[in-house]
Length: 569
Image (cartoon, rainbow, N blue to C red):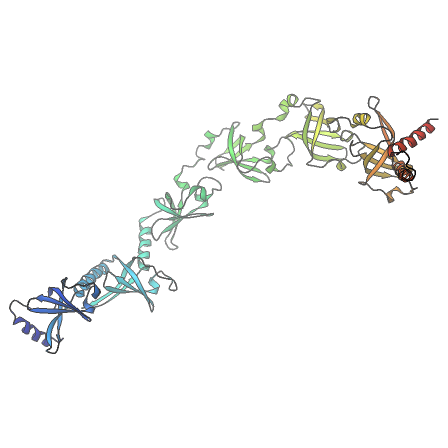
Protein backbone atom coordinates (compact mmCIF):
# COMPACT_ATOMS: atom_id res chain seq x y z
CA UNK A 1 0.00 0.00 0.00
CA UNK A 2 1.41 3.37 -0.98
CA UNK A 3 1.59 6.28 1.45
CA UNK A 4 -1.11 8.13 -0.47
CA UNK A 5 -3.44 5.14 -0.30
CA UNK A 6 -2.77 4.74 3.40
CA UNK A 7 -3.45 8.46 4.05
CA UNK A 8 -6.71 8.15 2.15
CA UNK A 9 -7.62 5.16 4.33
CA UNK A 10 -6.67 7.05 7.48
CA UNK A 11 -8.88 9.92 6.54
CA UNK A 12 -11.71 7.51 5.87
CA UNK A 13 -11.39 5.88 9.27
CA UNK A 14 -10.87 9.10 11.17
CA UNK A 15 -14.38 10.15 10.18
CA UNK A 16 -15.53 7.69 12.78
CA UNK A 17 -15.55 9.13 16.25
CA UNK A 18 -12.74 7.95 18.55
CA UNK A 19 -10.77 6.13 15.90
CA UNK A 20 -7.19 7.04 15.00
CA UNK A 21 -5.39 4.87 12.43
CA UNK A 22 -1.61 4.91 12.14
CA UNK A 23 0.70 2.44 10.44
CA UNK A 24 2.59 0.50 13.14
CA UNK A 25 0.07 1.36 15.83
CA UNK A 26 -0.63 -1.41 18.36
CA UNK A 27 -4.25 -2.56 18.45
CA UNK A 28 -6.28 -5.17 20.25
CA UNK A 29 -9.40 -6.95 19.11
CA UNK A 30 -11.65 -9.97 19.32
CA UNK A 31 -11.84 -12.81 16.81
CA UNK A 32 -15.26 -12.73 15.15
CA UNK A 33 -14.75 -15.14 12.22
CA UNK A 34 -12.19 -17.41 10.53
CA UNK A 35 -11.65 -17.57 6.77
CA UNK A 36 -9.41 -19.65 4.57
CA UNK A 37 -6.83 -16.89 4.21
CA UNK A 38 -6.98 -15.41 7.75
CA UNK A 39 -9.20 -14.25 10.61
CA UNK A 40 -11.56 -11.28 11.07
CA UNK A 41 -11.10 -9.20 14.21
CA UNK A 42 -13.47 -6.72 15.82
CA UNK A 43 -11.26 -3.74 16.74
CA UNK A 44 -14.02 -1.46 17.88
CA UNK A 45 -17.72 -1.66 17.51
CA UNK A 46 -17.49 0.42 14.36
CA UNK A 47 -14.46 -1.21 12.67
CA UNK A 48 -13.15 -4.67 11.76
CA UNK A 49 -9.62 -5.76 11.04
CA UNK A 50 -8.10 -8.69 9.18
CA UNK A 51 -5.04 -10.80 10.10
CA UNK A 52 -3.72 -12.81 7.13
CA UNK A 53 -2.44 -16.37 7.63
CA UNK A 54 1.19 -15.31 7.19
CA UNK A 55 0.82 -12.71 9.99
CA UNK A 56 -0.61 -15.10 12.56
CA UNK A 57 1.56 -16.37 15.41
CA UNK A 58 -0.25 -19.72 15.60
CA UNK A 59 -1.84 -22.11 13.11
CA UNK A 60 -5.30 -20.83 12.25
CA UNK A 61 -7.02 -23.93 13.65
CA UNK A 62 -5.84 -22.91 17.14
CA UNK A 63 -7.87 -19.67 17.08
CA UNK A 64 -11.46 -19.58 18.38
CA UNK A 65 -14.22 -16.96 17.97
CA UNK A 66 -14.04 -14.72 21.01
CA UNK A 67 -10.24 -15.01 21.44
CA UNK A 68 -8.45 -11.73 22.12
CA UNK A 69 -5.54 -10.91 19.83
CA UNK A 70 -2.98 -8.13 19.63
CA UNK A 71 -0.94 -6.77 16.77
CA UNK A 72 0.14 -3.74 14.81
CA UNK A 73 -1.48 -2.09 11.81
CA UNK A 74 0.40 -2.77 8.61
CA UNK A 75 -2.12 -1.62 5.93
CA UNK A 76 -5.69 -2.11 4.69
CA UNK A 77 -7.50 -4.22 2.13
CA UNK A 78 -10.82 -4.07 0.22
CA UNK A 79 -13.20 -7.00 0.67
CA UNK A 80 -16.52 -7.93 -0.87
CA UNK A 81 -18.45 -6.58 -3.82
CA UNK A 82 -18.73 -3.21 -2.16
CA UNK A 83 -15.01 -3.28 -1.62
CA UNK A 84 -15.29 -2.70 2.10
CA UNK A 85 -11.99 -1.52 3.54
CA UNK A 86 -10.49 -3.52 6.41
CA UNK A 87 -7.47 -2.73 8.56
CA UNK A 88 -4.70 -5.32 7.97
CA UNK A 89 -3.03 -6.36 11.22
CA UNK A 90 0.15 -8.36 11.92
CA UNK A 91 0.22 -10.40 15.08
CA UNK A 92 3.71 -11.64 14.19
CA UNK A 93 5.52 -8.34 13.60
CA UNK A 94 5.79 -7.17 17.25
CA UNK A 95 7.23 -10.53 18.28
CA UNK A 96 9.61 -10.53 15.32
CA UNK A 97 10.88 -7.09 16.32
CA UNK A 98 11.42 -8.27 19.89
CA UNK A 99 13.32 -11.37 18.71
CA UNK A 100 15.46 -9.35 16.32
CA UNK A 101 16.22 -6.84 19.08
CA UNK A 102 17.29 -9.69 21.37
CA UNK A 103 19.42 -11.27 18.64
CA UNK A 104 21.03 -7.95 17.75
CA UNK A 105 21.94 -7.39 21.39
CA UNK A 106 23.45 -10.88 21.58
CA UNK A 107 25.41 -10.20 18.39
CA UNK A 108 26.82 -6.93 19.65
CA UNK A 109 27.70 -8.36 23.07
CA UNK A 110 29.05 -11.65 21.64
CA UNK A 111 26.61 -13.60 23.80
CA UNK A 112 25.68 -17.24 23.24
CA UNK A 113 22.14 -17.79 22.00
CA UNK A 114 20.18 -21.03 21.73
CA UNK A 115 18.30 -22.43 18.77
CA UNK A 116 17.29 -25.60 16.95
CA UNK A 117 18.44 -26.97 13.61
CA UNK A 118 15.27 -27.54 11.60
CA UNK A 119 16.44 -28.33 8.08
CA UNK A 120 19.41 -29.15 5.87
CA UNK A 121 19.93 -26.58 3.13
CA UNK A 122 22.55 -26.03 0.49
CA UNK A 123 25.87 -25.30 2.16
CA UNK A 124 24.64 -25.85 5.69
CA UNK A 125 21.56 -25.85 7.90
CA UNK A 126 18.53 -23.71 8.68
CA UNK A 127 18.30 -22.79 12.38
CA UNK A 128 15.20 -21.53 14.21
CA UNK A 129 15.89 -19.00 16.97
CA UNK A 130 12.86 -18.55 19.17
CA UNK A 131 9.59 -19.03 17.29
CA UNK A 132 10.13 -16.65 14.38
CA UNK A 133 13.71 -15.90 13.38
CA UNK A 134 15.45 -18.18 10.91
CA UNK A 135 19.26 -18.20 10.77
CA UNK A 136 21.82 -19.87 8.53
CA UNK A 137 24.43 -22.26 9.96
CA UNK A 138 27.28 -22.83 7.46
CA UNK A 139 28.46 -26.42 7.21
CA UNK A 140 32.02 -25.39 8.14
CA UNK A 141 30.69 -23.95 11.42
CA UNK A 142 28.25 -26.74 12.25
CA UNK A 143 30.65 -29.29 13.86
CA UNK A 144 28.42 -31.97 12.32
CA UNK A 145 28.70 -34.68 9.68
CA UNK A 146 26.44 -33.49 6.88
CA UNK A 147 25.60 -37.08 5.93
CA UNK A 148 24.41 -37.80 9.47
CA UNK A 149 21.13 -36.86 11.08
CA UNK A 150 21.33 -33.50 12.88
CA UNK A 151 20.42 -33.29 16.58
CA UNK A 152 16.85 -32.35 17.42
CA UNK A 153 17.69 -30.76 20.79
CA UNK A 154 18.38 -27.08 21.42
CA UNK A 155 22.01 -26.09 20.74
CA UNK A 156 24.22 -23.12 21.58
CA UNK A 157 25.37 -20.70 18.88
CA UNK A 158 27.34 -17.53 18.47
CA UNK A 159 26.05 -14.97 15.93
CA UNK A 160 28.83 -14.22 13.43
CA UNK A 161 26.80 -11.97 11.10
CA UNK A 162 23.64 -9.89 11.64
CA UNK A 163 21.94 -7.51 9.19
CA UNK A 164 18.50 -5.93 9.61
CA UNK A 165 16.29 -3.57 7.58
CA UNK A 166 12.70 -3.32 8.56
CA UNK A 167 11.20 -6.78 8.47
CA UNK A 168 14.08 -8.05 6.37
CA UNK A 169 17.07 -9.57 8.16
CA UNK A 170 20.00 -11.90 7.72
CA UNK A 171 21.43 -13.93 10.63
CA UNK A 172 24.43 -16.29 10.39
CA UNK A 173 25.34 -18.45 13.40
CA UNK A 174 28.21 -20.76 14.38
CA UNK A 175 28.66 -23.73 16.73
CA UNK A 176 32.38 -23.82 15.98
CA UNK A 177 32.87 -20.34 17.46
CA UNK A 178 31.11 -21.43 20.66
CA UNK A 179 33.53 -24.31 21.02
CA UNK A 180 36.56 -22.20 20.12
CA UNK A 181 35.57 -19.58 22.69
CA UNK A 182 35.08 -22.16 25.44
CA UNK A 183 38.43 -23.74 24.62
CA UNK A 184 40.19 -20.37 24.68
CA UNK A 185 38.48 -19.50 27.92
CA UNK A 186 39.65 -22.76 29.54
CA UNK A 187 43.29 -22.33 28.52
CA UNK A 188 43.30 -18.66 29.51
CA UNK A 189 41.88 -19.41 32.95
CA UNK A 190 43.98 -22.51 33.84
CA UNK A 191 47.68 -23.20 34.37
CA UNK A 192 49.93 -26.17 35.16
CA UNK A 193 49.50 -27.14 38.81
CA UNK A 194 45.82 -26.21 39.02
CA UNK A 195 43.47 -28.75 40.56
CA UNK A 196 40.37 -29.36 38.43
CA UNK A 197 37.25 -31.47 38.81
CA UNK A 198 35.81 -33.62 36.06
CA UNK A 199 33.74 -36.64 35.17
CA UNK A 200 35.30 -39.93 34.00
CA UNK A 201 34.21 -40.29 30.39
CA UNK A 202 36.08 -43.48 29.37
CA UNK A 203 38.63 -45.90 30.84
CA UNK A 204 41.22 -47.49 28.55
CA UNK A 205 44.28 -49.68 29.06
CA UNK A 206 46.55 -46.68 28.55
CA UNK A 207 44.70 -44.34 30.92
CA UNK A 208 41.42 -42.49 31.51
CA UNK A 209 39.62 -39.64 29.72
CA UNK A 210 38.17 -36.97 32.00
CA UNK A 211 35.50 -34.53 30.82
CA UNK A 212 36.40 -31.11 32.27
CA UNK A 213 33.90 -28.99 30.27
CA UNK A 214 31.51 -29.67 27.41
CA UNK A 215 34.37 -29.00 25.00
CA UNK A 216 37.50 -29.99 26.99
CA UNK A 217 38.49 -33.57 27.77
CA UNK A 218 41.77 -34.33 29.53
CA UNK A 219 43.80 -37.53 29.69
CA UNK A 220 45.24 -39.23 32.76
CA UNK A 221 48.05 -41.43 31.36
CA UNK A 222 48.57 -44.83 32.98
CA UNK A 223 51.87 -43.60 34.44
CA UNK A 224 50.07 -40.73 36.22
CA UNK A 225 47.36 -42.79 37.88
CA UNK A 226 49.30 -43.82 40.99
CA UNK A 227 52.78 -44.39 42.35
CA UNK A 228 52.49 -48.08 41.45
CA UNK A 229 54.83 -49.37 38.73
CA UNK A 230 52.08 -50.52 36.38
CA UNK A 231 48.66 -49.55 37.71
CA UNK A 232 45.47 -50.85 36.13
CA UNK A 233 43.28 -47.85 35.16
CA UNK A 234 40.11 -49.86 35.83
CA UNK A 235 41.14 -50.30 39.48
CA UNK A 236 41.14 -46.52 39.97
CA UNK A 237 38.43 -45.10 37.66
CA UNK A 238 34.80 -45.90 36.90
CA UNK A 239 32.66 -44.27 34.20
CA UNK A 240 30.66 -41.21 35.35
CA UNK A 241 32.77 -40.99 38.52
CA UNK A 242 33.54 -37.44 39.72
CA UNK A 243 37.26 -36.93 40.34
CA UNK A 244 39.73 -34.20 41.27
CA UNK A 245 43.04 -34.11 39.40
CA UNK A 246 46.06 -31.89 38.92
CA UNK A 247 46.98 -30.35 35.56
CA UNK A 248 50.55 -31.33 34.64
CA UNK A 249 50.56 -30.21 31.00
CA UNK A 250 48.63 -27.74 28.82
CA UNK A 251 48.93 -27.49 25.02
CA UNK A 252 46.44 -24.96 23.65
CA UNK A 253 47.61 -25.40 20.06
CA UNK A 254 47.02 -29.17 20.19
CA UNK A 255 44.12 -28.70 22.64
CA UNK A 256 45.61 -31.26 24.98
CA UNK A 257 45.27 -31.33 28.74
CA UNK A 258 47.30 -33.91 30.67
CA UNK A 259 46.12 -34.69 34.17
CA UNK A 260 47.55 -36.56 37.13
CA UNK A 261 45.91 -38.43 39.98
CA UNK A 262 49.34 -39.45 41.25
CA UNK A 263 50.28 -35.81 41.83
CA UNK A 264 47.40 -35.56 44.32
CA UNK A 265 49.01 -38.25 46.49
CA UNK A 266 52.22 -37.83 48.57
CA UNK A 267 55.30 -39.61 47.12
CA UNK A 268 55.67 -42.85 49.13
CA UNK A 269 59.46 -42.77 48.57
CA UNK A 270 59.86 -39.60 50.66
CA UNK A 271 60.30 -41.51 53.94
CA UNK A 272 60.96 -44.99 52.54
CA UNK A 273 64.20 -45.46 54.54
CA UNK A 274 62.32 -44.89 57.79
CA UNK A 275 59.53 -47.33 56.87
CA UNK A 276 61.66 -50.20 55.54
CA UNK A 277 64.73 -51.03 57.63
CA UNK A 278 67.56 -53.27 56.46
CA UNK A 279 67.40 -56.73 58.03
CA UNK A 280 63.69 -56.47 58.84
CA UNK A 281 60.94 -58.66 57.39
CA UNK A 282 57.88 -57.25 55.60
CA UNK A 283 54.88 -58.62 53.72
CA UNK A 284 54.22 -57.70 50.10
CA UNK A 285 52.48 -58.77 46.90
CA UNK A 286 54.22 -60.31 43.87
CA UNK A 287 53.60 -57.95 40.92
CA UNK A 288 55.75 -59.45 38.15
CA UNK A 289 58.11 -62.36 37.50
CA UNK A 290 61.23 -62.00 35.36
CA UNK A 291 64.01 -64.44 34.36
CA UNK A 292 66.33 -62.67 36.85
CA UNK A 293 63.91 -62.56 39.81
CA UNK A 294 60.54 -61.16 40.85
CA UNK A 295 59.19 -57.82 42.09
CA UNK A 296 57.27 -57.40 45.32
CA UNK A 297 55.03 -54.40 46.09
CA UNK A 298 55.45 -53.38 49.73
CA UNK A 299 52.87 -50.60 49.36
CA UNK A 300 51.36 -48.78 46.35
CA UNK A 301 54.27 -47.14 44.57
CA UNK A 302 57.02 -48.93 46.49
CA UNK A 303 58.38 -52.11 44.93
CA UNK A 304 61.51 -54.13 45.59
CA UNK A 305 63.37 -56.79 43.63
CA UNK A 306 64.02 -60.30 44.85
CA UNK A 307 66.99 -61.34 42.70
CA UNK A 308 67.04 -64.99 41.67
CA UNK A 309 70.11 -65.50 43.89
CA UNK A 310 67.90 -64.57 46.87
CA UNK A 311 65.05 -66.94 46.02
CA UNK A 312 66.53 -70.42 46.55
CA UNK A 313 68.86 -71.92 49.12
CA UNK A 314 69.68 -74.70 46.73
CA UNK A 315 68.93 -75.31 43.03
CA UNK A 316 68.75 -71.91 41.27
CA UNK A 317 67.78 -73.49 37.94
CA UNK A 318 64.18 -73.87 39.07
CA UNK A 319 61.42 -72.01 37.30
CA UNK A 320 60.46 -69.03 39.46
CA UNK A 321 56.81 -69.54 38.54
CA UNK A 322 56.92 -72.84 40.46
CA UNK A 323 57.76 -70.87 43.60
CA UNK A 324 55.57 -67.75 43.35
CA UNK A 325 52.75 -66.44 41.20
CA UNK A 326 51.65 -62.87 40.43
CA UNK A 327 49.28 -61.84 43.21
CA UNK A 328 50.87 -64.05 45.87
CA UNK A 329 51.39 -62.42 49.26
CA UNK A 330 54.94 -63.23 50.42
CA UNK A 331 57.26 -62.38 53.28
CA UNK A 332 60.60 -60.82 52.35
CA UNK A 333 63.65 -59.46 54.15
CA UNK A 334 65.07 -56.04 53.24
CA UNK A 335 68.71 -56.24 52.14
CA UNK A 336 69.13 -52.60 51.12
CA UNK A 337 67.28 -49.35 50.31
CA UNK A 338 68.42 -46.82 47.67
CA UNK A 339 66.06 -43.83 47.91
CA UNK A 340 67.85 -41.84 45.18
CA UNK A 341 67.43 -44.60 42.60
CA UNK A 342 64.09 -45.74 44.08
CA UNK A 343 65.33 -49.30 44.51
CA UNK A 344 64.90 -51.83 47.32
CA UNK A 345 66.77 -55.17 47.39
CA UNK A 346 64.81 -58.00 48.99
CA UNK A 347 65.48 -61.63 49.97
CA UNK A 348 62.84 -64.32 49.82
CA UNK A 349 65.02 -67.16 51.09
CA UNK A 350 66.37 -65.28 54.12
CA UNK A 351 62.87 -64.37 55.17
CA UNK A 352 62.03 -68.09 55.19
CA UNK A 353 65.25 -69.04 57.01
CA UNK A 354 68.11 -71.47 56.26
CA UNK A 355 66.59 -74.97 56.07
CA UNK A 356 69.93 -76.57 57.15
CA UNK A 357 69.66 -75.01 60.62
CA UNK A 358 66.96 -77.50 61.68
CA UNK A 359 67.62 -80.30 59.18
CA UNK A 360 68.56 -82.96 61.76
CA UNK A 361 65.26 -82.37 63.59
CA UNK A 362 63.11 -82.55 60.46
CA UNK A 363 65.03 -85.18 58.48
CA UNK A 364 66.68 -87.68 60.84
CA UNK A 365 68.88 -90.42 59.39
CA UNK A 366 66.76 -93.46 58.52
CA UNK A 367 63.59 -91.50 57.80
CA UNK A 368 61.81 -91.74 54.44
CA UNK A 369 60.68 -88.66 52.47
CA UNK A 370 59.37 -87.75 49.03
CA UNK A 371 61.49 -85.61 46.74
CA UNK A 372 62.05 -84.50 43.16
CA UNK A 373 64.79 -85.71 40.82
CA UNK A 374 66.66 -82.51 39.88
CA UNK A 375 69.65 -84.04 38.07
CA UNK A 376 70.65 -87.42 36.62
CA UNK A 377 74.36 -88.28 36.66
CA UNK A 378 76.29 -91.26 35.24
CA UNK A 379 77.04 -92.27 38.85
CA UNK A 380 73.56 -91.73 40.26
CA UNK A 381 71.00 -88.96 40.71
CA UNK A 382 70.37 -85.81 42.80
CA UNK A 383 67.06 -85.65 44.65
CA UNK A 384 65.69 -82.51 46.36
CA UNK A 385 63.34 -83.04 49.29
CA UNK A 386 62.71 -79.29 49.81
CA UNK A 387 64.15 -76.01 48.60
CA UNK A 388 67.84 -76.04 49.55
CA UNK A 389 67.84 -79.64 50.81
CA UNK A 390 69.09 -82.21 48.30
CA UNK A 391 71.25 -85.33 48.36
CA UNK A 392 72.93 -87.93 46.18
CA UNK A 393 71.45 -91.31 45.37
CA UNK A 394 74.39 -93.48 44.33
CA UNK A 395 73.99 -95.72 41.31
CA UNK A 396 73.74 -98.81 43.50
CA UNK A 397 70.97 -97.25 45.61
CA UNK A 398 68.59 -96.49 42.76
CA UNK A 399 67.16 -99.98 42.30
CA UNK A 400 67.42 -103.49 43.76
CA UNK A 401 68.23 -104.69 40.28
CA UNK A 402 71.27 -104.07 38.16
CA UNK A 403 71.47 -100.49 36.89
CA UNK A 404 73.76 -99.63 34.02
CA UNK A 405 72.26 -96.25 33.07
CA UNK A 406 70.35 -94.25 35.74
CA UNK A 407 68.44 -92.31 33.07
CA UNK A 408 66.68 -95.54 32.08
CA UNK A 409 64.98 -95.57 35.50
CA UNK A 410 64.65 -91.93 36.61
CA UNK A 411 64.28 -88.60 34.84
CA UNK A 412 64.46 -84.97 35.96
CA UNK A 413 61.15 -83.93 37.50
CA UNK A 414 60.21 -87.44 38.68
CA UNK A 415 58.79 -87.66 42.19
CA UNK A 416 60.48 -90.43 44.20
CA UNK A 417 60.68 -91.67 47.77
CA UNK A 418 64.12 -91.71 49.40
CA UNK A 419 65.57 -92.98 52.65
CA UNK A 420 68.20 -90.82 54.37
CA UNK A 421 71.35 -92.94 54.75
CA UNK A 422 73.77 -90.33 56.14
CA UNK A 423 74.03 -86.59 56.92
CA UNK A 424 76.96 -84.15 57.01
CA UNK A 425 75.37 -80.96 58.37
CA UNK A 426 78.61 -78.99 58.45
CA UNK A 427 79.34 -79.57 54.74
CA UNK A 428 75.63 -79.67 53.77
CA UNK A 429 75.73 -83.16 52.32
CA UNK A 430 73.16 -85.95 52.35
CA UNK A 431 73.14 -89.49 50.98
CA UNK A 432 69.85 -91.01 49.95
CA UNK A 433 68.59 -94.40 48.82
CA UNK A 434 65.64 -94.89 46.52
CA UNK A 435 65.63 -98.66 46.72
CA UNK A 436 65.75 -98.77 50.54
CA UNK A 437 62.76 -96.46 50.79
CA UNK A 438 60.62 -99.52 50.05
CA UNK A 439 60.70 -103.14 51.16
CA UNK A 440 63.44 -105.31 49.67
CA UNK A 441 61.60 -107.11 46.84
CA UNK A 442 63.72 -110.20 47.38
CA UNK A 443 61.95 -110.66 50.72
CA UNK A 444 58.66 -110.66 48.89
CA UNK A 445 60.05 -113.06 46.28
CA UNK A 446 61.18 -115.43 49.06
CA UNK A 447 57.61 -115.45 50.39
CA UNK A 448 55.74 -115.68 47.12
CA UNK A 449 57.83 -117.46 44.43
CA UNK A 450 59.43 -120.87 44.02
CA UNK A 451 61.08 -122.94 41.31
CA UNK A 452 58.60 -123.83 38.57
CA UNK A 453 56.50 -120.66 38.93
CA UNK A 454 55.75 -118.67 35.79
CA UNK A 455 56.63 -114.93 35.81
CA UNK A 456 56.29 -112.05 33.37
CA UNK A 457 59.25 -109.78 32.74
CA UNK A 458 60.56 -106.93 30.55
CA UNK A 459 63.83 -107.28 28.66
CA UNK A 460 66.44 -104.79 29.84
CA UNK A 461 69.51 -105.95 27.92
CA UNK A 462 70.40 -108.57 25.30
CA UNK A 463 73.94 -110.08 25.51
CA UNK A 464 75.64 -113.00 23.79
CA UNK A 465 75.21 -115.30 26.79
CA UNK A 466 71.52 -114.56 27.28
CA UNK A 467 69.04 -111.81 28.16
CA UNK A 468 68.74 -109.73 31.31
CA UNK A 469 65.12 -109.11 32.32
CA UNK A 470 63.27 -107.28 35.09
CA UNK A 471 60.33 -109.00 36.75
CA UNK A 472 57.27 -106.84 36.26
CA UNK A 473 55.72 -107.48 39.67
CA UNK A 474 58.92 -107.37 41.72
CA UNK A 475 61.25 -104.93 39.95
CA UNK A 476 64.32 -107.18 40.34
CA UNK A 477 66.55 -108.56 37.64
CA UNK A 478 66.78 -112.17 36.49
CA UNK A 479 68.83 -113.93 33.84
CA UNK A 480 67.67 -116.07 30.91
CA UNK A 481 70.65 -118.09 29.55
CA UNK A 482 70.97 -118.20 25.75
CA UNK A 483 70.17 -121.94 25.77
CA UNK A 484 66.89 -121.16 27.52
CA UNK A 485 65.95 -118.09 25.50
CA UNK A 486 63.94 -120.06 22.93
CA UNK A 487 62.92 -123.62 22.14
CA UNK A 488 64.70 -123.13 18.84
CA UNK A 489 68.48 -122.88 18.64
CA UNK A 490 69.24 -119.19 18.01
CA UNK A 491 72.76 -118.05 17.23
CA UNK A 492 71.99 -114.34 17.51
CA UNK A 493 69.56 -113.40 20.29
CA UNK A 494 69.36 -109.81 18.98
CA UNK A 495 67.43 -111.15 16.01
CA UNK A 496 64.45 -112.14 18.16
CA UNK A 497 64.72 -109.91 21.27
CA UNK A 498 65.24 -106.24 21.98
CA UNK A 499 65.05 -104.09 25.15
CA UNK A 500 61.49 -103.34 26.19
CA UNK A 501 60.02 -106.62 24.88
CA UNK A 502 57.74 -108.56 27.24
CA UNK A 503 58.44 -112.25 27.90
CA UNK A 504 57.01 -115.05 30.03
CA UNK A 505 59.36 -117.58 31.60
CA UNK A 506 59.53 -120.27 34.25
CA UNK A 507 61.85 -120.12 37.27
CA UNK A 508 64.67 -122.66 36.89
CA UNK A 509 66.79 -121.53 39.83
CA UNK A 510 66.04 -119.24 42.78
CA UNK A 511 68.37 -118.07 45.55
CA UNK A 512 66.98 -115.37 47.89
CA UNK A 513 69.08 -115.56 51.07
CA UNK A 514 68.82 -111.91 52.25
CA UNK A 515 71.05 -112.34 55.32
CA UNK A 516 73.89 -113.79 53.26
CA UNK A 517 73.32 -111.23 50.48
CA UNK A 518 72.83 -114.09 48.03
CA UNK A 519 70.17 -113.27 45.51
CA UNK A 520 69.87 -114.92 42.12
CA UNK A 521 67.17 -116.04 39.71
CA UNK A 522 67.52 -118.04 36.50
CA UNK A 523 64.59 -118.21 34.09
CA UNK A 524 63.75 -120.28 31.06
CA UNK A 525 61.61 -119.26 28.15
CA UNK A 526 62.46 -122.53 26.37
CA UNK A 527 61.09 -124.81 29.12
CA UNK A 528 57.86 -122.78 29.34
CA UNK A 529 57.33 -123.05 25.57
CA UNK A 530 58.05 -126.82 25.60
CA UNK A 531 55.69 -127.31 28.56
CA UNK A 532 52.95 -125.39 26.77
CA UNK A 533 53.46 -127.54 23.69
CA UNK A 534 53.36 -130.74 25.76
CA UNK A 535 50.24 -129.55 27.56
CA UNK A 536 48.48 -128.95 24.28
CA UNK A 537 49.44 -132.44 23.17
CA UNK A 538 48.29 -133.89 26.48
CA UNK A 539 44.93 -132.10 26.27
CA UNK A 540 44.43 -133.53 22.84
CA UNK A 541 45.18 -137.03 24.13
CA UNK A 542 42.91 -136.52 27.14
CA UNK A 543 40.12 -135.65 24.85
CA UNK A 544 40.74 -138.78 22.88
CA UNK A 545 41.24 -141.15 25.83
CA UNK A 546 39.20 -139.26 28.48
CA UNK A 547 42.17 -139.53 30.87
CA UNK A 548 42.80 -137.40 33.96
CA UNK A 549 43.71 -133.75 33.32
CA UNK A 550 47.34 -132.60 33.56
CA UNK A 551 48.21 -128.93 34.28
CA UNK A 552 51.05 -126.84 32.87
CA UNK A 553 52.45 -126.51 36.39
CA UNK A 554 52.56 -130.30 36.82
CA UNK A 555 54.51 -130.77 33.62
CA UNK A 556 56.99 -127.98 34.47
CA UNK A 557 57.61 -129.20 38.00
CA UNK A 558 58.06 -132.74 36.77
CA UNK A 559 60.52 -131.65 34.09
CA UNK A 560 62.45 -129.18 36.27
CA UNK A 561 62.45 -131.63 39.22
CA UNK A 562 63.93 -134.36 37.07
CA UNK A 563 66.53 -131.97 35.64
CA UNK A 564 67.55 -130.72 39.07
CA UNK A 565 67.76 -134.29 40.54
CA UNK A 566 69.88 -135.39 37.58
CA UNK A 567 72.07 -132.33 37.90
CA UNK A 568 72.43 -132.94 41.62
CA UNK A 569 73.47 -136.58 40.99
